[in-house]
Length: 346
Image (cartoon, rainbow, N blue to C red):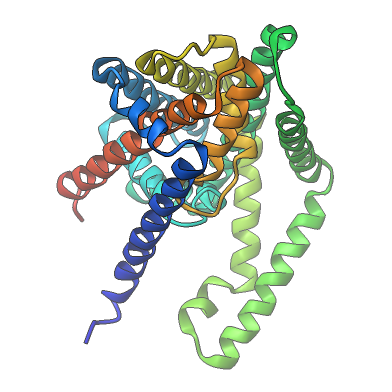
C-alpha cells in the first residue's frame, strides 16, 4: 500500500502519461485527416540537420521566456544562475506534459521557481502574472507585424486568427483594468472564497487546508501579491526588457516554423511564420498536453491561408514544427528536471 507521501507524486505522473498518450492519438487522427501517407512520406524526407537547428530555435524560445521572467524578478528578488534556469525548465516541463497545463501554467511556473529561492509563492506568482500578460501582448504584436507584412499576399480566410488576436488583447485589457481599477473587488472575492473554503475545511477536519485558507493569512498573501505586482510594473525599463525577451521568444518560434518548412522543402515566408507561430498559440487551444491537436490544426490552417501551402504539406510542416518547438523542448525540460533533482536535492 502506498504511503500518503508517495501518492501525490504518482498521480501527476499518471496524468502526464495518459495525457501524452491521448496527445499522440490525436496527432495520429490529425495525420490521417490531412493526407495520411502523403504527410508521413514528406516527414520522412525532412533534412535532419535543418530540423535539428530548428529545434534549437524552440529551446531558445523557452530560454528567452525564462530570461523574461528572471528580469521580472530582478526588482524584488534577484535570481539567476544554473539553479534558476533548471527550476524554470522543470516548471515548464510540468506545464508542457500535464493535461490543462497551458491553463494552469502561471501557477505551475510560480511554484517551480519560488521553491529553490525561498520566495513566497504569491510574490513569485505576481512576477509570473506580469510576464504572462506581456507575453500575450508580445504574441499579438509579433503576429500583427507578420500579418501586416503579408496582408496583400494572404490567400485564405484569416478571420479565426484575427479573432484570437482580438481575444488576447481583450484578456490583457481586462486583467490590467481589474488590477489597476478594481483591485479592491478582486481582494474581496479572493478573501471571500478563501473564507468559504476555510469553513468547509474546519467542518471536515482538513487541517492543511484549514491552515492555508485562514482568511487573515490569505489577506496578507493577497496584499503581498499586489505589492510585488506594483514593484514589477512600476519599473518601466524592466517592463520593457521583460516584453522584449517575450517578443524575442515568439520570433524564435517563428524561426523554428520557417526552419521546419526549409527542412521539408516547403516555402514558408518568414512573414507568414511571424504571423502563424504566435497566432496558433493563441487560437490553437486544447486541454491536452502542450495544446496538442489544437496547435497543429491552427498552424496548418494558418499556413494554408497565409502562405498558400497545400494542406498535406502544411500538415507536415505543422507536425515537424511541433517536434521542434514542443517535443524537443519537453526532452530538454525533462533533462533539466532530473538535473535539478540531482544537483540541488534537499
